[in-house]
Image (cartoon, rainbow, N blue to C red; front, top):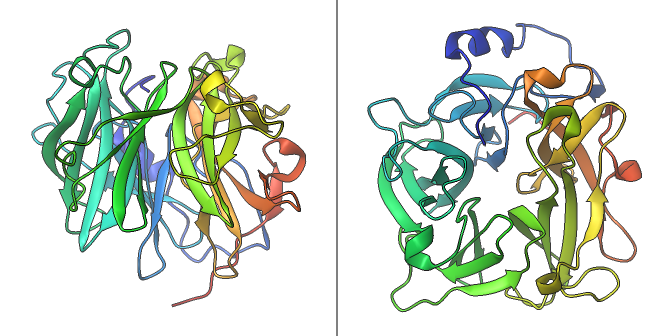
Length: 331
């Protein structure tokens, strides 16, 4: 979701890691010290991590990292000439990056503030994670699929089938996609899986459960933001999801996973979880730096621990300031 357009050249200068910089055993948050909201991340076959974000940097910024900590802006997914036009005056929000077959597939929202029936979800493809991406157009517009505020797409493949989940404070829905992931499966019907508490959907399968993560509260009000990460779980992809106490997600039953700290306001809209080379799970998400809230939503990193009760957690339930680095082996 858009705050302001930043200079691509300035970002390239301020997010580069100095050559030869010594690697510490710990890292400090934020790991991207400029506004890059609603991150999504993919680890490629060569071990490289790629992160994409809402276009506070116009045309969707692409960051690259070898270690999940040191990120460099390498370009944008689109140009002014190639950017999606399905909502002509809208911004590109909350992308979701996936690798399907040999293609890099970028799902995205196109919207403008207040345009909850005109917004929608589209898809673009590339041969390389750094692009260039070719827009394949819309999957649907809110008024066509009859879901108000159809933004924040999330892709998951399960038991050989491909699905898209989406929604923002008007219900969370899922629907099956075609085999290539570039269109809705013919005859597929949407299914509602959660109520009106959340946006920024992610679903992680772990053990016997699917964990539905979302963000509740206000995302974008700086010091007044109330964003936080919440969760529910189910033994079936399409639910029923419930919180720790058995309250259905369809009735807004979600348990708290992460909330604000003295250093970070409004942590939320996490990326899909990724792993390091020891199999540890990590979560990237955005938040406002309490020391500089006018700088927008920066990107933070925290380790996920799976508790004895099966639920995911971060240490203390709040963003870390300094923590042990992910373990990445040279390839």
